[in-house]
Length: 151
Image 1 (cartoon, rainbow, N blue to C red):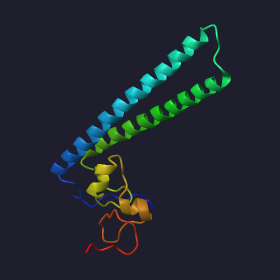
Image 2: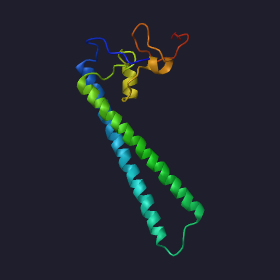
Image 3: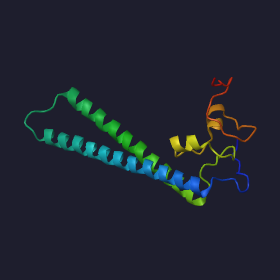
């Protein structure tokens, strides 16, 4: 399916966009803090490795392997956080452009709950779950099937 342009004038209000901006900026601050901690951890792993290299007693091979795995995992986490930060920046640009919250596949407004939970999303829950755009143009979080009614 090719991306669809949103209907003319379809967008979230400035008030909603301000709420989304605050949510994205909070997520960005948390991600930056997590990135800082991961970089510190990587620095600690590297400095402890350098200290042990200069010691008289060498580290057991199994310990060296564990440390290498820890460093590799930390590098992976750093890469994921950096990618997430890039996507958060893109979200902020879409908020500025007033195109934030519009599904790139359906052209409908993405449910507010989804945008607050996954601030980097560019797909409606309807499309993400069912791989099809809703015929009524309303994004729904719940899965297909009989809807459960509250008593």
